[in-house]
Length: 167
Image (cartoon, rainbow, N blue to C red; front, side):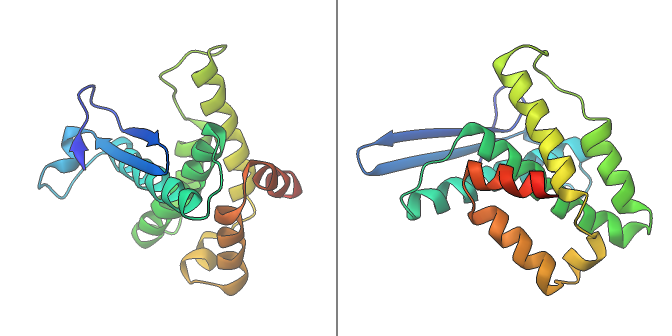
């Protein structure tokens, strides 16, 4: 993984024929050898890893991936990863994570822009989907919660949206 020039997480994809190249660029702070990083940097790393894994798996299976799928999956993955850390720190941690990630989210791209609207939609959808996931069950590897998360990861955009609407 490399450092991003603009200080934000980026995933670069180049497809040529049957070859797929993926580069994950991370904020410089994420690559420093310090233990403490901000929630923002931690989430950017989780998002970059999520994008990478999702793209690789979709390519391995010969399936397409939309940008909305990538963002929605990353929002769900960030919630699962960050609640795991928060749950160990405080019993109220998972609810604070929901508030930080979904209710108090700030966006770099303005409302009405393609990117801004996509990120806001992914955040709203992830908030709805994750509201039915009990953090203690997810992190205890409770069978039904893990099965739900795996099914969500394997789903394409349409199936992901159906799962969100069912929540």
